[in-house]
Length: 220
Image (cartoon, rainbow, N blue to C red; front, side, top):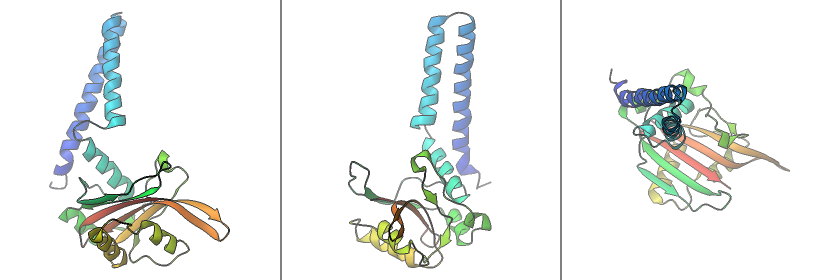
């Protein structure tokens, strides 16, 4: 029962939002059939505004929790909430988006305990892809420390915190090099004479021991 409680409020909001949209859609149909053009137009505007706010802007109460659930399930196969970052750093971005960001989120005791010994489904889960990452290549979750591979040095160079401060830098290096943590990434690959190169990357780290989830984005 305790696993369900954190999700009851977001679920209630979804039901309420769906009900409001349904009511406005019903009013629109009734007023359109009754040839009440003025009222039909107002209902149409309200209906479209609700859809826009709920699905595009995400300003409805609880939308952050729904976004967290979509993110966690889509990227790990496990439902959990991230909330507000406990630490973060964002460099200045160039006009083309070049820059670096790192955000650290606290995990609950229950979620951290799951990742101490995750099931096989977790290791078969590839990071989700959005239209913004069309053409990028996702990886599956792997245990730290990262094993050397053709992209290892490129990945490490891109994701290592730059000018993020001592605390964030130490936390990253400790988790990256300590056994028992996990990492996964999606990357924008391109070819060079010397081989495949990573230009941009999203990297996620999970540390059950420190009970944190880390998001890193590096664009070059």
